[in-house]
Image 1 (cartoon, rainbow, N blue to C red):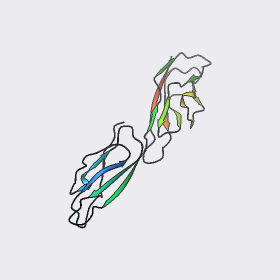
Image 2 (cartoon, helix red, strand yellow):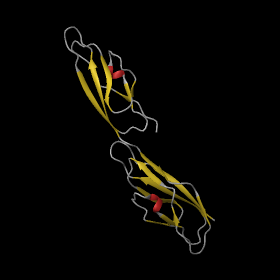
Image 3 (spheres, rainbow, N blue to C red):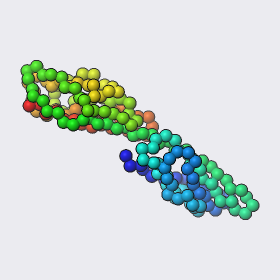
Image 4 (cartoon, one colour):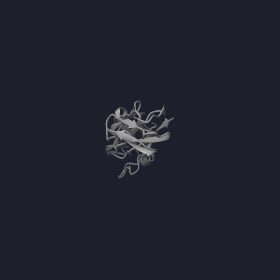
Length: 175
């Protein structure tokens, strides 16, 4: 996923200080400026690709006259987004006693720890649909004598933090 820049709003310097410079004191990523800025809130922080965890940024003021520089920190927690892959389409031949189809090739990851399968179009049944940490072990059984397209949806749990649950679909063509 492409990292999203974070505007460092609310940052300021005051008193006799007229500018401040940001630095990354722990964690990964880049700052749009590490120079002394009269408006440090105009600086953005961009996490490194695939970085998750905590980053600490330090704003250090200039040292006007005989006064020493002052500094303060801002901590940002970057949570992993949930990921989901329902897998590619499956084509099967139907019979009066349909066989169960294992939904191999499906996965969840990132901030997600479980996923739940549902039938969003068509008939049949799911076995052990979830929530499960192993969505590739779930089976789908078509309804007897059904032919056509069935759409299944794999939806992740809602991970901790601000990231949302995500879902993906998989089609099963029953001939």
